[in-house]
Each structure stands twice: as structure tokens, then as C-alpha cells.
Length: 320
Image (cartoon, rainbow, N blue to C red):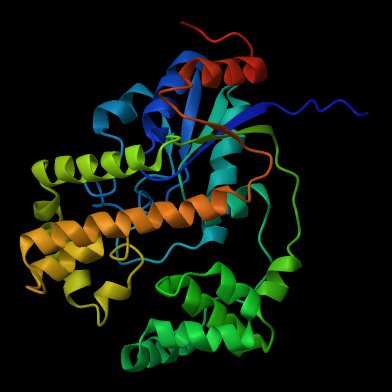
């Protein structure tokens, strides 16, 4: 067997509100590492409180990468993320430090660690037509259309995941081939490091649900709605023809806050909808995580010693 001499890298995966960010920060300080965010909301400037973005103090304690790299009205694809993350990881390794990948965006992790198919670029005209169709019939109807032309993709994509439904239909219409075919043909580029995949998740789903609810209330108390008002006031968002379809605004909690400030519901209903949307996000994340057959699962509270042992066994002795 050939000895794998690549440097080491840790991937901290898990559902939202599972404690990934806190453990990543602690590990980075103990190991002399740097954090690469694998989160599709943290890439956007202005999405701070509602996205649970690391604070300025936390970012000053440990270098963080792939945070605040786009404005909230700008697109940012998984392919762009993979490219930018590889640049950051190569630089971290060149400094002799350990990259710690932390986040819950499965598509970003797959793009980075496994590679993406060489699919066609986004086509504005096609996307505009699909969005207009969705406005007229709803995304559930478009998901049903997708199930006809690409059952495999429809089975993986939730009926409310507008971004992925749009992309799957776009690729199929542009090329005449299902996006699932393109994805099966993805070219793997060897990752530059050995990766220890760790999934952090409370063993009791009720504990996670309680953490989600508590964290959202903390966000509200910290000024989440004021943050949303500031985003809505940005000229680029005010001028956008369909701001609720922007990936940044579709981030969990933000869409519900936007609708609340539009007067679509009362405060109690807004809170309930945002918490429910976050739970649905966690459910989708569990579906992705269960496919990571080489990942090791730990309850970050009940199994903290075992979690530390797994890291120490991979890296070497942990600093106190």
C-alpha cells in the first residue's frame, strides 16, 4: 500500500446550530489552524446576525476564509466556492498550518472535496424564463416538471429548493441532458490533503430543535430585524426585480424576515416560520450527511472526549 504523505485537513460537518463554529474556533486555536467556512450564507456581506457569522473578535483570534466574499445581490456558485476554497487551502498548507473546513452546505463540500461536472455556464435568458414560469405556477409545479425529465435529480432536490430546481431545469433545457447525467461524469481532482470528516450533531433531535429555537431568539434580541431592514434598504436590492429569489435573501430566516417586514404576517407567525424553515434546513442537511459514509459522527456535548480523541488520533496530541 502506498503511504499517503499529503498534509492533514479536518472537515467539521453537521446540521445548523450543532456547534460546528465553536468547535472549529477552539480546534484552530489548539492546533494552529485556519478556518475555511463552508457556508453559503456566510459568503455574503451584511448577512451577519441571521447567518450566525463569526464575530469580529472571533475572526481576529483565528484567520477565517470565504467569509464576506460577495455582495448580497451577487451570485456565487459552488464551482466558484470550490475554486476559491482551494486557493485558500493551498495557502494555509504552504504556511504549514492546518485547514479546518467548517460548515453545513453539502453542495459546497461536494464541490470542494469531490469535484463538479463540467456543466454549461448559467444562462440569464433561460433563468429568467424559469423564474417567470415559477412566478406563474409555483416552484412545486416546476419540481414536478423536473421529476418528469430528471427523476434522479428531483428525488434529491426538495420541492422548495428554488435555486437547485432552477439550475437542474436550466441545464436540461440548455443541453437536452439531465443534470444528474452531468453530475455522474464529474472529474475528480485529487484533494491536496488527507481529510478527517467529522459530523457534529446532538444524538437527540429534540436537543437540536431546542438549540435552533434558542439561537433564533438570541438573533432577534441581537438585532436581526434591524439587519434585515438595512439589507432591504440597499439600492441594489431595492432595484432588483425579484429580491426574494436572490440566494442571499433565500438564506434561512432572511426570506421569512423579509416577508414579515412586508407585512405578510405578525411577529409570532414570523418567528414560527423562521424556526420551522431552520428545522427543514437541518432535515435536508441530515439527508446529505447520511451519504457521507466515511464521516464519523459525534454528539459534541455527550461525546466530547471521543471527539477530541478522534482529532488527536488523526493530527497528533492536542494542545491543552
